[in-house]
Image (cartoon, rainbow, N blue to C red; front, side, top):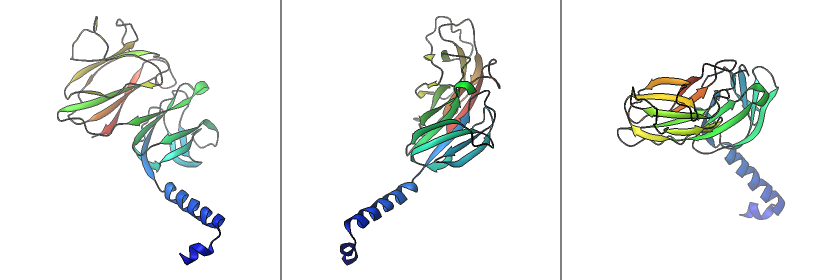
Length: 226
């Protein structure tokens, strides 16, 4: 207390601010990066001017990494260069986050999504669809029993726009047929595949262009939990 009394008010405030900044800088969270820009090539990712990921190829998912929490300057660069393709401020909360580079190089932009890592109820799974395909545009998503005709069926997720994500969908664990079509068009399917998530799993299904862009539309599955 005697020392505090000897310090001037300005010095005392400066010291407290420095302590606050120092404590805040040690706060960490979990984030993963998906390179979903089909013609951007391999990318490096920096947070607050510090390179955290290098040489991430198209379609690659880095998995969760420990990174600083809070407001961060995100810079996405052509691998091995200091040329920013994306430069924006993002907020990384205390939970888990997915960051995607999306769009063609001429209009590349980041999409930042909060992830859910709370386990589903017993016997259930949680699925989310992320539309990162500029070629596909707005899509309908059907998650149905295998062999189901989708004619006249309401989409599980309707008109999911490019650079958008559905909410997490809770359903019983089991085997499903995943069909993705242009919005409002059941006669054409971009993706028709089988899903067999196990109980208590959480998955994000990322819809992507082919490498360099265009068709065929592809799918990458991210493990959010289990």
